[in-house]
Image (tube, rainbow, N blue to C red; front, side):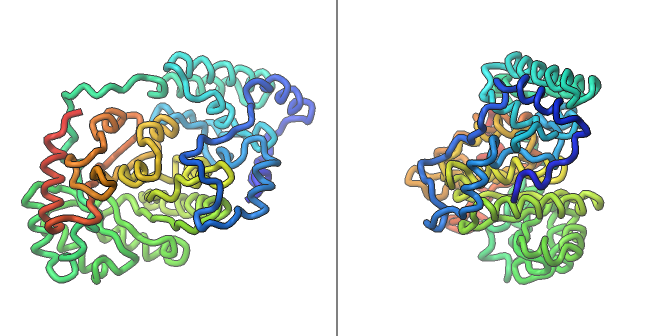
Amino acid sequence: MDASSARPSLHRSTRARHLLAASLAATLLPFTPSPASAAESTTDGSSAPAAAIEQVTADACPWGYTTSSTVFFGQDRADSGVPNRDLGDGCTIMDAVWADAPFANHGNFVSTVSGLANALRQNDVITPEESASIVQAAADSEIGKPQPASGTRALPDDRIGLVLYTVRATMPNAPDATLAALAACGYRNAEPSGAVNNFYGKTAAALAPLVADAGPSVPSIGIGLGDLRNNLDGVIANANAFGAKYVRISGSASWTLDDYSEVAATLNAVGAELKKVGITVAYHNHAFEFTTQNGVRGYDVLVRETDPNLVAMELDLYWATSGGADPVDLIKQYPGRFSLFHVKDMAPNGSFADVGEGTIDFARIFAYSAMSGVDYYLTENDSPRPDGVSSACDSYANLRALRY
């Protein structure tokens, strides 16, 4: 995707653009995302497309934030509501802000944003009112504030759930017994995954009442990217059948940077339609999104090129860690973007473990819950032992006992 093709008119003169470039020369540094690993090839081992390479060399802020969103530092009051305007050379206001990251403290962050907003106001890029809104949003954000784990807080029980992939072995033939057992050990939320009208061999209309009868709510369902592209009416009908307010997809290890950008555009377009009916689309990561291609992580493309008011991220804590990313660093980098957590633990050998029985420091991560914007904490184990229900119930008990 050509970054210039999506740039809106800023209604300012060429001279003003040159003045802006001069006044922000120290701020608009070339923007290079921090790589998660040393790999420089695509995920399938081939070279990145020539178009992607040309984009990286031609754009002063390659694969940076697009103009589709607002200047956003987190949820609620930390969203300024001001369009993330283009500043030239592919750089946006958000790119200019994050060029100075990481920030030593909250005051340093607010000072940086204030200086930038003042320069933009003086050069007629934003109005005085917009400048004030941006600075106020920065002041109201959590960025730069320490988030220590006090060891005194517990997760709210009504926000804990289970990804039903953990019990996929028994869901097709014994859904009633499986769901009843999960409810009995305490789960109040569940996330079914599959495709439109195929959740463990059942349609949404058939499975939804079984889940409801057992007791758990369904805040989120997992579907396919093809469903979003080709059957949006079916996606909406399935989400409504379960009462879900999130629908999430996963990606492919074969995607190039251009593919990530294409998917981001799809998520924005679909997200705008789903928002009209009270549903938010979300993206669930694995590890491959954190592999670099030409120095850029696919995950960064997805987050920066999607509108935070339309698209959420479902952060899988196991897969992010497995891919070399620190979940806390991701939250600091993208505050307010992570509406859903997949709470999955890692054994010392890198395999899956029940939550609280592995090596991931959940207390440290959960201390950043306010900054992340998380709505639900969904446990999961891809290889449960001795069985899905036992593993799920152990994870629930451990998570309920956790203090952060």
